[in-house]
Figure 1 (tube, one colour):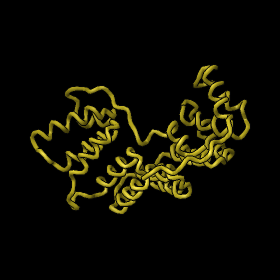
Figure 2 (figure 1 turned 90 degrees about the vertical axis):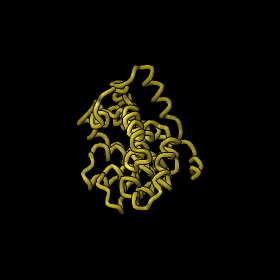
Figure 3 (figure 1 turned 60 degrees about the horizontal axis):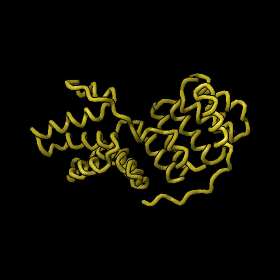
Length: 242
């Protein structure tokens, strides 16, 4: 199973679900709850008073990216043509937009430019690792995830992503060894549970995988998942066109 297939189900760092708009809510509150439609509405109103404001357009590009509106995100960030505007945050948002557009090699370059601009956001290493994963460059993906760890990013998220790489390479027992302590610490984490179940099934431990899945899915869903995971690994997909 390739990283492309696994990550679609398990990793959601490149996409977010917006909350219903809360009229009158402050921008800080909108950002805290991930209400990206509300954020778009807020900054579009600002453009009425200050057209072509670079900071506002970058915020709009970021919010539209989170909403999954890649065309609008690309439009607003394309307006920022002056090199003086191309700081770390600009390249971070540009990289996220490339990720949403499945331009993974370009995303890696943008993330590297953001790092070179000294962006203070350890999530960028997770993002870069995911981009490398889509490119099936597991060595650099692993290095990027561990860089996030060295920059103080959540250990459990890093381990979950590292385990995804192990599963993609059919190194299933190593994935189990990474995930089992994480799962035992927080058995309510559905993503970790599902990752662990995949690794256990691939490693031949159907019984434990079933126990873990039953804590999150019905008996019928668990049986369906187990049967799907027991199927032979698919042949590698062609590389994504850039």
